Structures are given as C-alpha cells and as structure tokens.
Amino acid sequence: MIGGSHSSLLAPVAVLLLAGAAAGQSSEYERAQIVAERKPVMGDLQDNYWVLFNVNKGDSEDFAAAAAAAREMSALMTRFVSLLEPGTSRGEAPGSRAKPEVWSEPETFASAVETFQEATAAMAAAAATGDRETYMGEFESFTGACTACHGLRPSSGGMFRFAKGE
Ligand code: HEC
Image 1: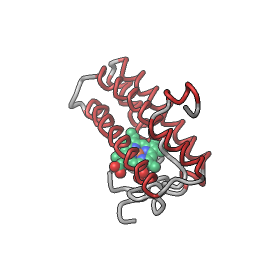
Image 2: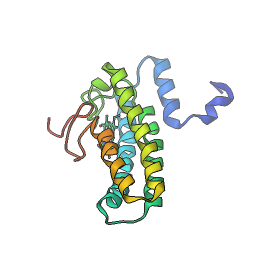
Image 3: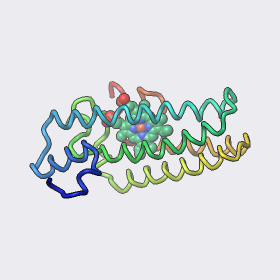
C-alpha cells in the first residue's frame, strides 16, 4: 500500500489531498467535495458556540456542557484547517466562501487559528470554574477569536470569508 503503515491513520480526504498533490492538481469535483466536507465542520462549530452562548446569556447553567463544547470546538478547528486545500477559495471550488487571503496571507491566517485555539482552551478553563463572572469575562474575547475571521451572522463576511452576495 502506498505510504506504508501510516496510510491507515489518514482520513479519506487526506488521502484524496495527497493523491491530488501527486497528480499535480485535484479536479473540480474533488475540490467541491473538500468544500462540502469542511462546511459542516464550521456548522458544528456554530452549534457548539450556541451551547456557550446560552450559558453566557443565563439561559443555561450547564457549565460542564460549555467546557465540553469549547474543547470540541478546538478539535473541530483542527479538522477544518486540514480541509483547507489550496485551490478551494471562492471562485475556485463550487460552494466555497473562503477568501483567497486564507492562502495568500498564511501567517495572518495561522495566527487567527492559533488565537482561536488559545481562546477555546481559556474558555474551557473558565467554564470549568463554574463561576459566572469568570465565564462572562472570557466569553467576550472568545467571541472575538471567531470574528477575527468572519462575523457571527451566517450571511456576514470578514477577513477570511466573503459575505453572502458580496
Ligand atoms: C481561523 C478563521 C476562522 C475562525 C476563527 C472561525 N471561522 Fe468560521 N469560517 C472560516 C472560513 C474560511 C469559512 C468559509 C468556509 C468555506 O466557505 O469553505 C467559515 C465558515 C463558517 C460558517 C459557514 C459554514 C457554511 O455552511 O457555509 C459558519 C457557520 C462558521 N464559519 C461559524 C464559525 C463560528 C461560530 C466560529 C467561532 C466560534 C468560527 N466560525 C470561527 C474561518 C474561520
């Protein structure tokens, strides 16, 4: 098997990406598949965000669920980043709203990802205290780590995502 024993550890899309790289370029169909796979990952990020949001608002007291949601969001971001194959910005891959800056400004993008990952860790820790004030203090900067890339409304744009209809 190509890649030896390590290949069994790779997710199907990673295998697809490697195959695409070896062939020079992935087909439009493959690029559309990657976008179709990564968008629900961001959707899951959104679902977890509501768990945190509802605790912040006072609609929920489930701090343990909020801590778990923050940790889950970190894993989801890692998965999302692994699906950012070059050639999948808007206009290059059907369905994509990713801006070319994701790839043309890799350091800015990587730093936004890192800030987000640090924010998920800080948010999980704040939630685990069960203290509302600590929680609310952290939630604001946590939300700021999302909006560094794009606005919270699904139709909104930002540094790394085109607004709907933009
Ligand atoms: C490091 C940058 C970055 C961060 C941080 C980030 N996103 Fe995203 N998000 C993106 C990009 C890029 C896209 C566009 C993906 C595409 O169209 O292929 C996107 C798309 C989305 C979408 C639309 C998915 C779809 O079906 O089209 C949702 C919802 C979303 N993000 C929610 C969130 C939430 C909630 C947070 C914070 C808790 C967040 N994002 C943090 C970069 C980011």
